[in-house]
Length: 66
Image 1: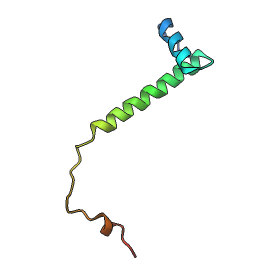
Image 2: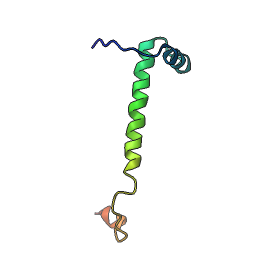
Image 3: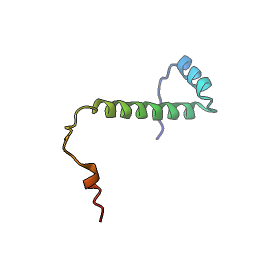
């Protein structure tokens, strides 16, 4: 899918140098992957502390040794 984007050339050049990529396409794709991963981690962290904890839960009994 071809897409035309107006990307800040200074930012792209810095990202290209820091990332060590050979092409601008590889730089942008890697940046998008990192952006997605970061947002997914943030979403997971925001869920911490939102689950009810049952202090009586016996994980050893749940293993079901048969």
